[in-house]
Length: 281
Image (cartoon, rainbow, N blue to C red):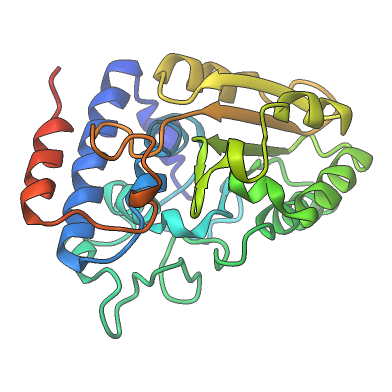
């Protein structure tokens, strides 16, 4: 019988704050060892990931393929360091393995690979495909009479992709109330600010027009995140949580800076960053 890991722990807000701080430390340390990867969009996802894995989702690190598990799909696959750190913290693989990120023959590739690492559901990579994959899983769950929820995390830059909106129409048509999309709305994508590349200031109205339940929150407020997760799936339609976040959250020289989308700070700056994200509670 599989253990419901999250419910068994059901971490409260104070513990989730501590976990979030520890995850930021792990992310920066991991990226520093690899000297490669994406810090900005990893740091912006932390509170959402911590709340999903340590509060909301049903999952079992000792049995990663448990049929009753909720599914988390990282569509913005470049945020793999954040996912790897949370999976390690849950116990899916040893923390020491984080030091192999992006190294030859490592299971921790630049983008997640479900064939290599336990706890990974899809091969995140091409932007825009995660929601479509989530729809397939949610439909399969309904057909099989299963009660799990499928969570899909997308980036705000990813909203530029036409496939996202085709998927949005499809999910609403099938009234997939077992599907929750989460948009990491940090305002910055690879080449600059989303407001300059493809403005997304009307995201909530767009998703409402596609017949989704829309919840907009401060994605760094643990209380707002867990309230949103608890409030999802209450109607007959899919839910999208627009999590307004800060790219590079917690590190002053990274916050809102497109330069750190895919750049790891040098040793001196990394030491500064690690001091800034230390748990102060």
